[in-house]
Length: 236
Ligand code: URA
Image (tube, rainbow, N blue to C red; front, top):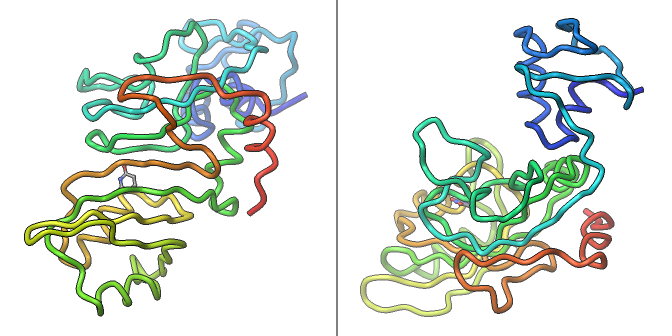
């Protein structure tokens, strides 16, 4: 027996928080009866219906690594009708992205219907390292570089790059490689904004041990079994 909101989230239908909202709003039926109680336990024989749609038991888990193009939103659907990253992948499974990249950010994004792995990887305590290439306005001065390296205060909490390297500079802009282990909203853009060097372009090149390899923008591949196991076994 498992909690209803967990079963809905694990089936890849939506996040656990949204599942709770659906339950509270009376949108979920179990065996034909509307359930509003969040703690309700269900098992695999119970028929779960969300806004009239029957939740299928998606036993087969799928895992994709996508090179996200700019101009795609990291969600399953969008109320402004923008293109979603999910639409780039040819599958009949209800997949969703693990974490988010901004609409205009490109690069490595994982998608899956495995709620357990997604929740594990997105949990702040798991600290998955991600590497970005940022094109920023202007050049970092030695003191700005040092300041950032030592940790920058963002909303009362420090953010420490685990790796920082200026790859290229010209008189107008710089290319900076930065690795961080956290996933706060717009974190890389906010870091450079705080230093008065706004991000012009942003690409994620690495997620934990995974890289884009030869994937071109918009291309994707399935993760191998070995990679999936390795993601499950990532140590904080
Ligand atoms: N940080 C950002 O600012 N944007 C992203 O898309 C990812 C990390």
